[in-house]
Amino acid sequence: MENAAGRSDDMLIIRGVNLFPSQIETVLLDMNETKTHYLLIIDRLNNLDTLELQVEVEDRFFQTESANWKIYEKKFRIMLKAQQE
Image 1 (cartoon, one colour):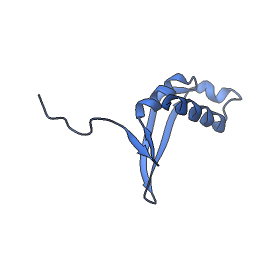
Image 2 (image 1 turned 90 degrees about the vertical axis):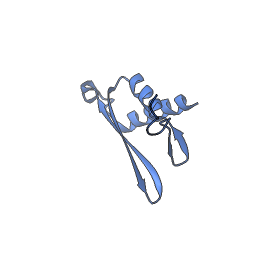
Image 3 (image 1 turned 60 degrees about the vertical axis):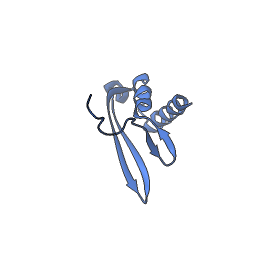
Image 4 (image 1 turned 45 degrees about the horizontal axis):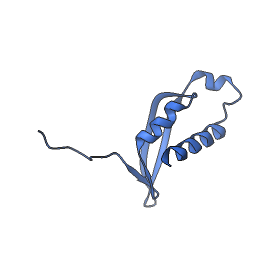
């Protein structure tokens, strides 16, 4: 058996909130507006970790009136919070 390389878990702590990338993926897969491709960008700004999420959306997202980023972001946040509970 080989020695384990890297971390044994993938938990992120962003501004005191424990977050697993798998939770983000689960929410994105449940949303009809997104495709399976996404990118998590972890950075540090003024000694605080930040997380930027870039998501590829379905073409039909732009063809409807629901193509409002604020509505989409709010829906994502609500679903992610529910996933964490």
